[in-house]
Figure (cartoon, rainbow, N blue to C red):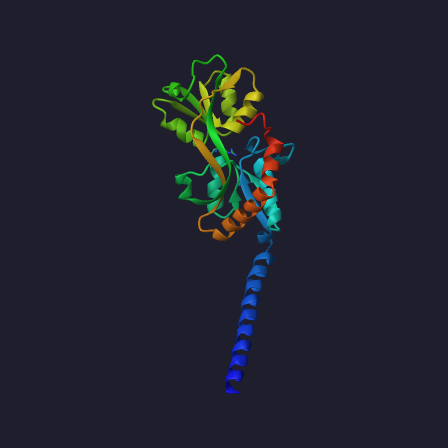
Length: 259
Ligand code: ARG
């Protein structure tokens, strides 16, 4: 008799506990979603980087914009895109002005000191753009040359490592390409996909076959923001699995274009 009573007391206690656990979880969840900011995910980007992010009229479109939109939908949140200089993206994330950065951003050890990265969603290479009649045939020929890059990018970092090279930093990748056509610089080092876009819009330029390193793009979040990082990773996994990521990429990069 006594034993039975004890069991039921324990059972009730267990029930109450689990209800309580449930209740507190709900409380934290709704706490999160009641404040307006939490319903909106703010993405920092630099919309000078087709096909990943660029303007179409007043809208920022591209692979990153669409992937971010799909992630926001998975998380039941609104997406707001803030355009800024590429080298302002990480400061915007660390200061909390933006929730994450999606900007064809390469995962690097240096950046990992300031932000955390999600799983990667694309691979890329740094390529060299030169004039069609240039003598420069590969990375080794860049020694002592004038090289244009977009400020703060991995292209900027590589170019700075080249012996005796003079690195010209531009705010926009396309400005570097224009400087190249005007003969102000000898080459541009930039990510492969925007390179193709820029070269196709400009007369007399070519992309060298020999590329620099392989890189991986990922989304950056504030250091220690494991909750958002895990939510984004889960959403990315779902979107990879469903074929949505491939679909978005295919919309912006045609298959015969891809290398
Ligand atoms: N992948 C390069 C980097 O991470 C260039 C990215 C530039 N992105 C942009 N949206 N402008 O440095």
